[in-house]
Image (cartoon, rainbow, N blue to C red; front, side, top):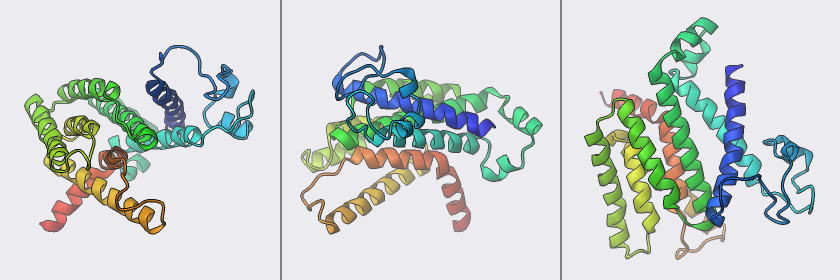
Length: 270
């Protein structure tokens, strides 16, 4: 029941993220009811239920019958799933969670550290999903998301016991890593937004092992997707790929599984 509740909560957040991404791009106020991007008719609450409304309406607007993008139910479902995985990760993983009884679960989550860590993970997931969708659709990374997110994560880091010095140092190093690429490639390799995103990623992973794993995963993922697109004829060697998409995806992956991967790797080395 706890996982079902968290999944539904994630669906609701995913629906909000869809609205947020669109209104950020259109530079519109976040206040007010949702509307159809085609006919601009206001959407009734019963047509705005995550996933269910999309299915009942058969993927079309009730008023103009134009198609609703698959982005909307997909982002809602992915957000719900990731929120569930983050909850289980903060409890110690599937093995720990499956062995919990109701009392064990209540005792485990009855701590400020658990809630702060979970809130941090949820916030990071939400921000990275916004970055992913925004960069995928428009090849842009909005500082209206990056700057406030950096401030929030820095504050949460302090509450969770991270060193402020270490957090800022990694943020600067991470940002400089992308700045160097920006200069070497003369703005052709990455965009300015990736530099600001790099600062945020340094705050998210103020540990060298996790930050480096995120970089490796992002660039491997980008190379693999680029190779597939080129061999299928959808991209050329001179084509650009939105780096923020792969950085965001890698960040979520490492956030959920990075510590386990690093621990097992170090144990293997030993």
